[in-house]
Image (tube, rainbow, N blue to C red; front, top):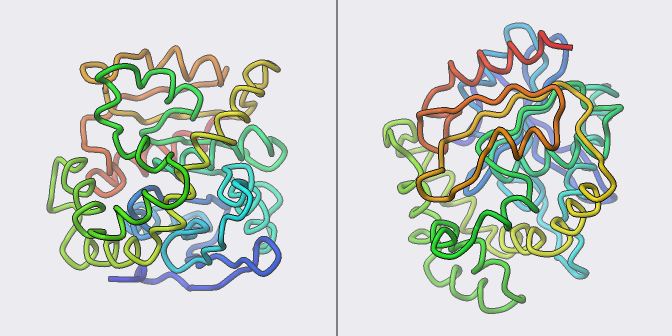
Amino acid sequence: MTKIDGFDYHRIPVDGDIALNVATGGAGAPIVLLHGFPQTHLIWRHVAADLAADHQVIVPDLRGYGASDKPADLDGQTYSKRRMAQDVVNLARALGHDRFALAGHDRGGLVAFRAGLDHPEAVTHLAPIDMLPTADMWEVMNGVAGVIGFHLYLMAQPPGLPERLIGAAPEAFFGYFLDAWTRDPAAIPADVRAAYLSASREAVTSIVADYRASAGVDREHDLADRAAGRRLRMPVTVLQQDWSSVVPYDGVALWGAWAADLEHQTITTGHFVAEEDPGLVAGALRALLERG
């Protein structure tokens, strides 16, 4: 499976000659859905079909992932979440929308969070799913708690070694996370799993660059915003697993520091909640869109 049934597909330039692979469906108020690692826009296939009943649903592959362009990272900025958030704003504008709701899972959640901070005039509602802002993430990954995020440390290393190690066994590396982070294996059927592994195998360099940015420029941007007291202005709904037994932190407190209008919901699925319980996610997004 490489497409969402009933959706149209486009290649839309968002930054010079960089174009994103984008699926669109439905009509109405726009909502953009951003995927995470190690996946593509297909993670949203069920939720997107649900929301398309009364929204225009815009589902891109992030830069560096899936069938979107994968520019070389020559300066450590190409995969900053600031640049990737600008991609999303430019994409929505190309489709005729100056304002839109935005949901992001995992890496897409980091992009969505940055878009909410950098472009409050454009993002009307925000839903980060099962992630923490970059600065907070690094601060809670202390001691043995960091073991669960070993890939974060691996891909933060300077260019060369991470790409070689992952490129030597990409299906083992990426497949590990699809297995370890899923409570219901049936939620990712064989054809979708194969699509994720194939896409990730072809994107090792850009995926590593995305993660490397989180140990550098992304963290710097978050720390600067925290010091300046910048907060998310729009209604925010966070869906998050309870990681407290492995990585001790207070999700409500961490997110409350960034968002005044916050709904925080603990989920009981695995990490890939949009596939394991799409009804829960679609319902949470609909409830979010009714606020504010």
